[in-house]
Amino acid sequence: TADLGWALYGAGRLQEAAEKLEVVAGQDSSNTKALRGLADIYASLKDSATDEASKQSYRTKAVKSWSDVARLDPKDGAAALNLCDLYRELKDRPNARERYQAAVNIDPGNTQARLGLGGVLVEENKFDEAIEQYTSVIKSNPNMAMAYNNLGVAMEKKGLVIEAKEQYQKALDLDPDYADAKQNLERLPDKKG
Image (cartoon, rainbow, N blue to C red; front, side, top):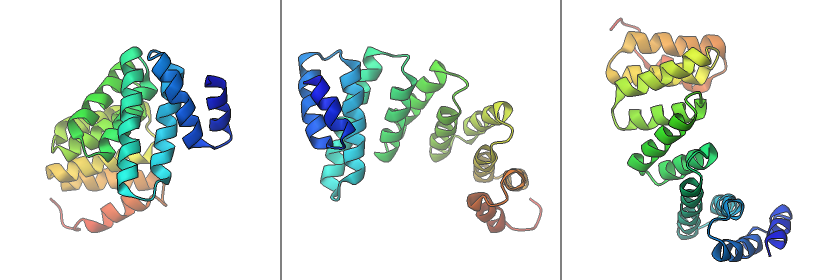
């Protein structure tokens, strides 16, 4: 059944693959390979669903599968990051923040986790903590325009307009075509402070 599930998955027959892998996971709830496959399939089915009820159903199934993987293998950074993204889609900031923090704890150099954690912290108006995350990313990735732009957003929301403009400009210096940084910089007033 597992081999057939993987063959169907490889052939793009996601619904059928999910059914087969659900049987495998039902027979062995510790089969992280089947659970990962199910989570990926549910995420793909969610993305291709045309109605919100189906999207929500697949999103919920993906959360459950990734949660099971994370429970079985707490050091699985991919499971943590996938859960983060799903929780952000669900606008569930506390769980997203918790999972991003877990991913950072697993791998402190995980840029994606730090950027995501910073984004959630900005959404929660925890600007100093967000600034710490973005600054950490910049220390290890000094050529990442997105990190400078995101740092600028956190600074701007904190009221540090001059500093925010500097960060947006650094992002544009690294990537002159970075539309978000360009829009952010153009939106701010020219006056100081």
